[in-house]
Length: 301
Length: 215
Ligand SMILES: N[C@@H](CCC(=O)N[C@@H](CS)C(=O)NCC(=O)O)C(=O)O
Ligand SMILES: [Fe+2]
Image (cartoon, rainbow over the protein chains, first blue to last red):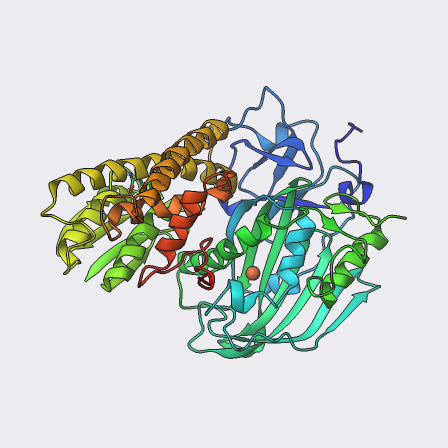
């Protein structure tokens, strides 16, 4: 196997997202970067895809027959994205059963380049404390600033972090909101660089909207953040739904890019527990236990 | 009513939302899926603006493109007090025009760097950043000398003009393109003054002014 710049075998063996299928033209080469390696990808529009290491005879924008590409990397099409791996990936990607429910809107809100490590971005995604300050009058508002007690567990059989019983007052929880409401949240971290959140749907109180962030590590301090929506909304055009999510992400972006250090410190003493709350502490511990070194500052041993 | 063809993360669109907010005029938004949808290059939008660019407004049957041109129009039509674009002051109008053109230069550099980093535009990012620093240095010096003379705004007036509005957004968003502002203290102080103008609004990536500094 070709030598990679990233030497973290845990990360190399994962599936990583590269692009939203809806945004790739069939039969045309697209270039991207994963873990500092230049890759190319193409789809045939009939359910097949190929990912390979960038090479001169298949330049970005050129036409390609997906079936005829040799030297392919592993590939998986899931949740509206094309995924690959630079190591030996597991057979399956983490499950999101809601994705198969036919009445949901599924779209890529955007893929955005962010100057931050993937773990820092995951940690921000898990933090409800910033809602009233960063997403003022959308996902939070003063005086409702308190993060109430919630539960966090590391599920051993599923190998993922699960935060439940989270609740937050939100003036405008989604495109379908008509008024402020107490919103229930569940967070999952089923992959070191991916997180899936579930929140109360304003249109059906028995169901939850699903929003995921899939981070493509470009290098240790840059990601492409793919934002997947899988929500209940029969009213709004795609572009209105995307705009809502991009507005929120655009508010997070400067916060993420100003994190220092850019890599996530895993030493429990490195940052004060106020910044690293319960789910963040569990996430850091889980990364440590897995032996992740890419995008983090490992704890001294 | 004014119609604004708008993309939330566009600093050029924000210029207009900002001025309309300060003038207290209402508008309706037509959201354009600039990214990832590239709706501004769609056939229907090219009929409205053959340049395929945002922003565009429609008002009373008039269709206008270019943020700076639209600022001129909005201030001329809707600013009852007439300070944002003072039509009776030729020297000041000349100055405003000069800095409006400068603002488009900021779009061509600082905004280009941001589009490269955040939305993967295929631009020469090093050239864009260098160009932004060159413009920022010029503006910082201009503002610093102004402060020595008791002038708070870009143009020679005791009040802000549309030149301040045109320059503000992509300066505030410059860090997203890898253009830090720590070497431009006069720009930073001016940004703070802009944020305190009555009717100021934010966009994603721009935060409100902090609490006023104690005297
Ligand atoms: N001079 C124009 C520049 C506008 C501009 O660059 N708009 C961007 C969005 S913020 C755009 O539509 N770019 C697409 C393109 O130039 O093709 C203005 O100030 O309005
Ligand atoms: Fe956020």
